Length: 362
Image 1 (cartoon, rainbow, N blue to C red):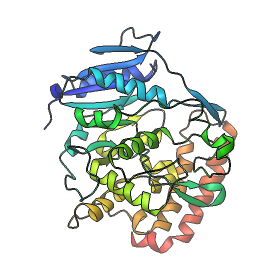
Image 2: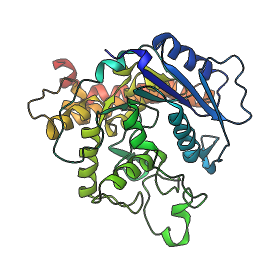
Image 3: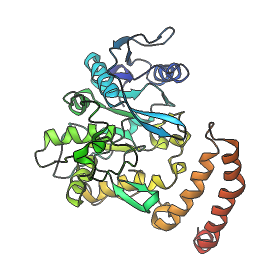
């Protein structure tokens, strides 16, 4: 078992008045002897916060993306990268954890997985030991509802948190350059790129932040990995991504990691994200690909009917998504009532009619 005295925790990002104190207290509770490094911005109010090392970085800024559900969205890729890199520079222990400043630990059980899934395939082995990361949002694909299709998303590895050898986290982040803004965020809006297709809907960035970190790391270490931008997707690059991921990462759901984000209630129950869950590297997908690429004798653990019958799973996830909507505090009353009295009853009724035989067998 890894001792907390051998761990440096880089808590990076803006100070959230409500969540950052909880984040730091949870680290101190469950990793009591860890070195806590708070890497945030100049001018931040850090009074009363529990940390060992404080880094006040000059804010590189963010670029406006657009609005969704009345909220303004910004691309914080440079903010995340800078605060992470500066934090890692101060990390003194053998192991390191990179953590958003609004994430909460409920225990240290993620450490139990550091020695699991250690077999590897022959290709794309970069890290000395596999890094632990979150299933939300480590993507395989994403649903494009308007056109009823799924788009493949290579190298989109969740950036919520990582744990592993400090030297391996350095390999992942330290040589990754800050992006040139605003052209990176507005990439698909530039005249020369307007005819290209982006899988990110209204967002026009060259890569999503998670995808940028993943792609940059593996492309600089393996000469045969190349993507011009997020539209450069084919079966070959996806196959390389799948091997890079399963040979270098262990992907954990909340039930395995005990790490969640209050901002998204589905972070404690990933299926409540809805149909998107089936495009994540959830437990079933990760173990299936571990078996395919690393250990042909491995027995995939889940017996979830949602994966044995994908159509059943996707239909069931629609009910979960409507239930999740009720937990969103900013949801207008009208929409909440629609979910409660129309969407949930209708989707539930259609689900039982369509899958009655499967439900009885279960």
